Image 1: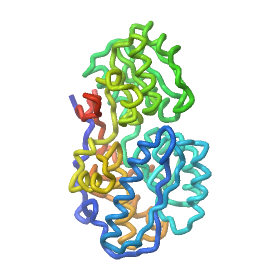
Image 2: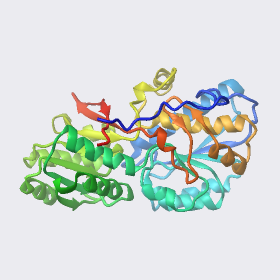
Image 3: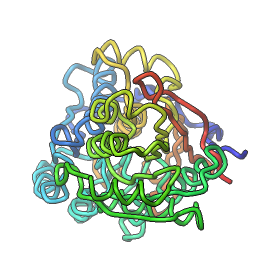
Image 4: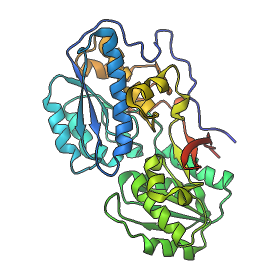
Length: 375
């Protein structure tokens, strides 16, 4: 099987490795994290914020304790709340770059405000393909989108699980719908049924959908959505007699899924991610992260660390206005600890650098399984 992994492209001669952000202090400007820190999707947002904050702290160790400040704006992952926080962010004229937004729905709602203010932003995790079709000039995505993740998940279902009857469910979010649609197309005739459920915090009783899944005779189920509801749904599926595996995307790739489902129900779940295992990050990142935060690096912690370091390297080289920093990011060829980063003219990661992995819930933990197959 071909692996959807091509993250080993060499950077150009002038590129530096992650963490090498020296090159002149240029202190006094600020970065921001815009995304969830609380709410039903908080775990994924906290992973990202902590990765970005670690990068800033390490930069300041080299360049002065208060050289660069990172501001935190908690959207709770809500498309309704994100625009207001984005307006607060752009009012701070010292902010020259944003790590975020983590989720696709809030990105669609708040990115126009960042775009109008001409503030460069790098999302470590928002994967809906439409985000790069808006004509935005300040948007960048540091991971593969769902046009890569969805087909990879479908290929895993067909080629690894060899499931012949697949039921597809989504939570009606921009992320969940887009990913589920890609999987449905990818499995083709094997998709024997579908349904929609409420998003995070909007539904706790999934009995109607459970009945549809069980009566369909499906041997596998794909869920497009986030970890809290996925866990509750998986728990009820097991109680309702469904014995097949659940497959889901990066929005479910979190310990919160196992906590919500319970170890027994969650066992064997396959979770795809346009990311490599955090444990595979280069250098001392994993040890540094655990020392600082007292937990293991989570999904997208390493990508967020790289995103912040791209901004910091640009600032260190004198790009201290949003416009100049955006020009720098547009041209970057950066070797990070999670991947190499080079962006297309619409802000997507260069196609040669896309990564998609499959993870598996085993013994109450999410562990790496394999690079996801393409076909």
